[in-house]
Length: 91
Image 1 (cartoon, rainbow, N blue to C red):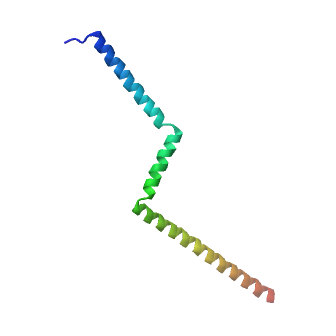
Image 2 (tube, rainbow, N blue to C red):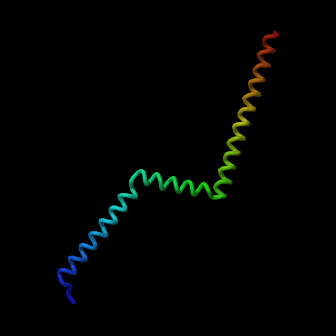
Image 3 (spheres, helix red, strand yellow):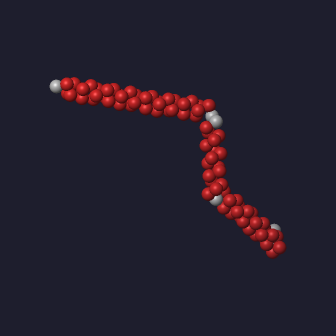
């Protein structure tokens, strides 16, 4: 059964409107401000997960441990250098 011209034109116009709507939506989604907002929302949601919080706490603890170890070693080296200077100055 052949379709008449008006039906075909209506289908074409409907398809054009749908395509225009899709393109508008894609343009809106790809705006930098919207991309930033989406990323921020996703990051916030991820940070609310208990597993992620535990991992971050572990990483923070490890970093703190390394910093403390570095400070202690630096102070020990400084103390040792002062002792060597003192001994050399007594000669």
